[in-house]
Length: 358
View 1 (cartoon, helix red, strand yellow):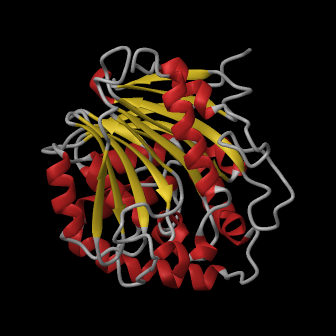
View 2 (view 1 turned 180 degrees about the vertical axis):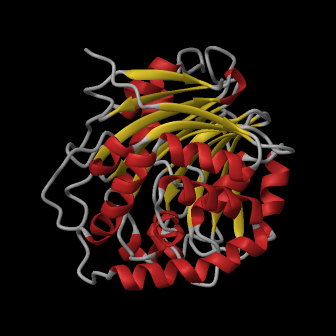
């Protein structure tokens, strides 16, 4: 099977310089994906929005981002300038999950050092989403000043996505059912907070200090073990692994103070979330040899086809809203080794390629 690696880039220096380097290197991809993104946001939804509406919503985010994260906004301005794409279009990309209530999925697992057969904790997930995004994706390492360096899989022009940092934190992300607040900051800026933090405590402090737009989930592996954060505009609740050192999360709320969202916002739960969570928990326990789980075990779990095609490894199906989606990538991050493994396409059909922080 021929490996299909994503393009890679390492940038460093000031935020503006990093943004310019990203914009210059990925100029064509950024232009194309920013033209495509609204069409994909509207796919599968009944209430479509126009470019004018999308760009007006993006402008509303400018001042909020500049107030709390001026350095990230400087990076985006550098990317916009170098790629000759308007800042509004980049902000549409970075706030795309605020534009509609389109559902996104993912199954995430977290395994502690003690539960990993290599002694190195890891987190992993499938990204059940839009396959049209794959050709525009890349692996980018950012080495800023005074913050943790981080490596992330994403579409260039987005400020952060799944990945790991130099401080031993890895993060996977799940869509989650709950309230939204249009006055809050888009989700990807909170992911950036996590990946630029030197500790999970610092990340939590940062997230709690800013207004938040979405309810979403951060499935993390840290130097202290698995840590899952269910984040809403009004609260942040943490879940930690039990005695077995393993944790699973999908697309519904688990923390006792938030489970009411599963009824209040039942229409925002990505399909088969409860079944996928139960299945992943069973598989983790079954695959643990003497209480240990390997990267190969994790890859096999993320390739599971129980209840195909709406399985952990998701394939196209006849569901109106999300049937055109699939597991676009599968990713496993090992922050203590400064590396991650990513499949380009469904993990049942495509090999995992290893990317290291350079």
